[in-house]
Length: 334
Ligand code: KG4
Ligand code: ZN
Image 1 (tube, rainbow, N blue to C red):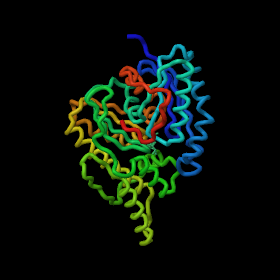
Image 2 (tube, rainbow, N blue to C red):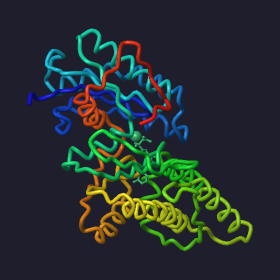
Image 3 (cartoon, protein in one colour):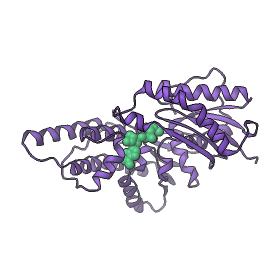
């Protein structure tokens, strides 16, 4: 089969990114321009600011991705882009860039769902086997996705309220840690112990998640300690929160693995960079000797465009195409 080269564009949140990917599993170039430094000054992503920075950076990022790949547009087989979900203003910038380039260079235009990108990021390090179960954990998503076969996605568990990354970021903020809080809590928790009792939320669907109660419980626990003039040990609070949050994740994963009996399990998304989660996966997967698993390297956990190229390749093969009036869809379904 002929090699397929795709330019991929991602701008759904606070990363402006472009990448050239060969056959869905080989990175030819990968450029990510992060806005974290700007947003950390505000303690979170300000959508208006994010879209403005995307506008400033998108052309340079795409140009660099093409230059690093040492390729002309005529050598590409298509352009894929994140259509959603994400921030409308941010998505819009990537969508417009992809449409303009596809039109100018007469290339097929391939829409990609951001979460499918996180899942297919694992294709850069492992052969993905089906049926597959994916745990997608990021700032905007907490999802268990069952894939019976290539490019078929069934969301079998989701959060009823906050995403797990959002909970990490909010708890970090009450602990006085900078944005993004996930890596901060990860680091701090290593020096503490889970000494503070926190609730285990029940959900109606046993594969669903809930994190807003946990976040409130952390705040209440801190208030209680303050009222009693007792010392609050931040590292222990971070560890308590982390153990409760990840314990809930694994409780659902365990049930889903039993229920769906996949041959492969992967984790994906920004929170998959969490060192304790990675430890838990290695420990807990020992009991599933018939299920292979992939823990993606840190660089492909957080947002990037290569993962959009990985998913876009399979969309390309399935002849999924967008026409010139496609728009960003902040609440796109898988
Ligand atoms: O996938 P991502 O880059 O963007 C979204 O699609 O949301 O994920 C960002 C999220 C943030 O909430 C960040 O705090 C969290 O991932 N995160 C972590 C870690 N690294 C990033 N959470 C826990 N532990 C980490 N080491
Ligand atoms: Zn993401």
